[in-house]
Image (cartoon, rainbow, N blue to C red; front, side, top):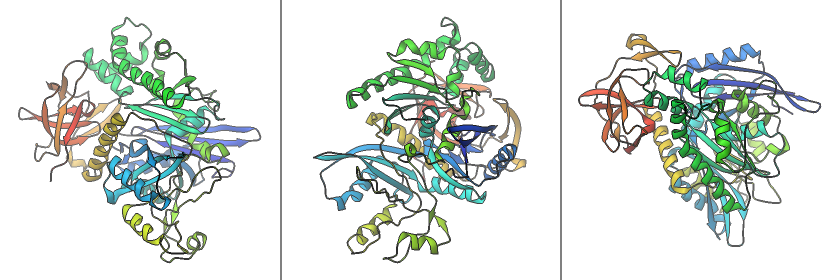
Length: 541
């Protein structure tokens, strides 16, 4: 049964857009009833964080009214930029020590402050001398932001994961052999490998549609909008064309990483991926699929959902997969889930059901699913609650099922990552999370607006330039295809170029705006793309 009768709603919110899909249950299978999409103004959502709650509420209300959605239950994809995953092994140990050992691993791996850390784990495999564990962690602050946001809209939301939603939309039935999904997004691209039991591998890369357009604009010395148009009309249809050469040079590194990942996966599991499906807005790049085919020894194709075959629109793939999760199909019950909870019990000896009936304040509950095959008990805890749980477990009749703020039921998935690469990526994401949490509201008064500029076809209010005061940190310029990085007088490629910086040069930075950082160049404030810098120092006090 779906969350809302025989229909389920999937809600996909990204930094730049909202997609909604309504899926209905039929006598034989499922069908897409309706879809809608709306662009978001810059600054409403940044890096998966809500920055302008009022505008986001209005956007959701408009799109729901357009689709005449009345039900209040739906499935939402928690931004993957805010979720940390890690697979590791634990040698033989006492079961009573497991939570502590997992917590210690989380402390070592996840760059989130202890007081803000929520984590869960699942046992993927048990062997004679070790167990394999999947750890999932998220910032308590991020989770609460989205939870409270939907509560204000009177929406009851099940939280899901975007990569799993893509898999559901592409494969209504689980594949018998491993398959790969390449999601080419706006700022990042992801390779996910799925098998009969679900997710088995994941890799992320800093290559996306916006990054490619910036590369074309920089190397061919043209405006961003002109570069975007040339990219989407000419693309890679003629490999001798200047734009195709720029795109190939930028994509070759990502292709090599995927090739190495497929080889690594084969070596680790003994299984070979049989095909790659391209999805996401970047997969519409003309000539891309034909260029990729010779690069791999397996089939490469454009991903098409059986439920969207008449629409031919890749933009609704994630929203469709999210909606499918609402039907609670048997094949989806092993996927990660976040559940809305009831308040923690203050007394021992009561059943979870009794506590839930008496509590009215909505928070989070624990799901405890027993399985004959493997351990499915998953607990999402903060460090303080972990200490309390350790004390409670020493008593008889202790109810080990009460914690705050979140549940992730993780089974049947294993992420085989290159360790160093993953740590670097998660450190970068954590830095962004930390900065976003400390930056405060980004909403500005009307009298603070300097001018209106058009960015990617959208009117953007530009604030008065602030003088460089106290530095937030220090950055090092990274290698770029051109050998230099442009400095502009605003946080977009449409702003005037006022200079350039070179790889390995270091600068203090004073402000963030989306994917841009403000530095001081020879006494003048300028903006550089964050994609091509690395932060070497944290925020200063």
